[in-house]
Image (cartoon, rainbow, N blue to C red):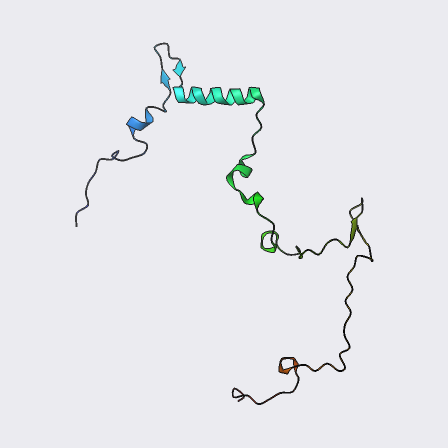
Length: 132
């Protein structure tokens, strides 16, 4: 098989013909003249600076990640989100946490003496066809 030989700049993104727009040109006195696109961009930046337009930082523009809710996979160990658990106290002004015992949940355990568990919890075992 023979490879098709092509011109070096054919289909190139930055060929000499394309780069002429972006090369600074000089006039007869040797003064550099900027391309009109660059002048337009500078004018827009100057207008924004004069108006005091505030723009978010580049990191916030790139990702829309800040709009998502936090999950345990995002922040790593030690983060417990809970499910509508509410607070059990208040933060102190020194960085501690004061527990309000009236808000702490307490659960009543039923009497387990008369409780009969099924075979999953070690109750009466029956022979199964998989026993070997």
